Length: 165
Image (cartoon, rainbow, N blue to C red):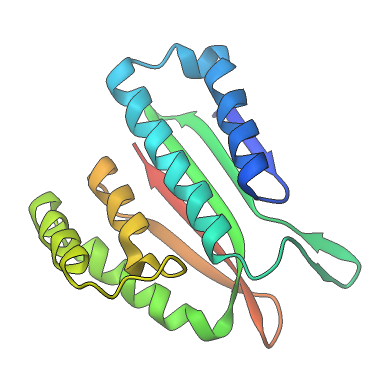
């Protein structure tokens, strides 16, 4: 496994911009075939945006250990793998799990239809986006989004995603 890009820390507009600029300068990233590079970049942008939009806090301290969001891009077994992690409220887990299950059931055509259906309903708020970011990720990769939730405490869990390109 080769780590191409990695960031663990607070996610805000400034850090998103800084990390995307840093990514563009990494030789291993620049060596990726352009068509694949565009997919990787697009998915990383969506992931960082989702972490930022859905964060409940910049960091969480549990038993003196700070829990921060992360994103990592690796090259493994002839595939690019993007992994992310961030804190979510336990109240949001079921909706997020349902969205991901629904997304993972669809092929590219089904995802396009789902996206169009959601966009046509004029009720999308900036905060939830109705899962459009996750649908966009699935359309870019054409693979299942792997995910898990790890309980932190009564209020929060750590949500991790793995996207393969």
